[in-house]
Image (cartoon, rainbow, N blue to C red; front, side):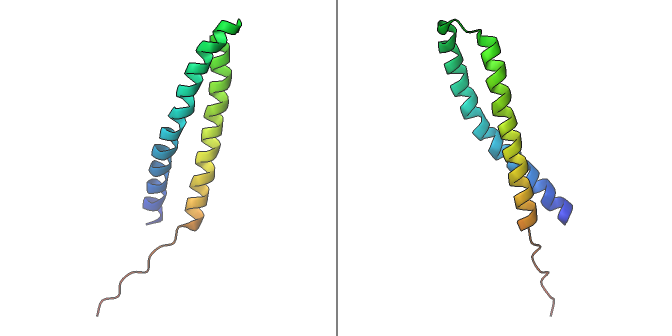
Length: 81
């Protein structure tokens, strides 16, 4: 049962956090285009900030997953009469 709980939490976190991750990436794409007007290399700017955003996502995913696993409690089995 614990293994099933682990898989459920992993897939739930990946789905949720990834969708949340796409919003800052969209904002980054827009801002990098504006920075190119400021004589900055768009590829370097996108790579550096994209990496930071990705690492933040991974940290948040690990934190949420560990928290969920420690809070997981198996429901008591129903007793048959």
